[in-house]
Length: 118
Image (cartoon, rainbow, N blue to C red):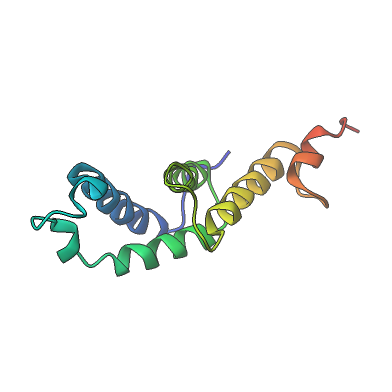
């Protein structure tokens, strides 16, 4: 299993993750109606774009797969994305893991994993 990642992936993920952590720390839902809402002043556009880029990325290492799962986990905890990019990223991780476990092949990742070895 490879641990190396694409050069641009980890810096983008770190930025996304740190922004998500700050938003979570500030309690986005809890301060939404407050005049002191710091998130109202925060431009989350770059975070949204970064998340979409990350979710469209097919993992090339276990590190990237784990990072994608973190984004998907947070999205699912927040009721999922309306554009289904979280589901797409989850499928990409499944395919990568199946390719690693049983080799590249045709058919759905889970089906390939469940087939008896030749």
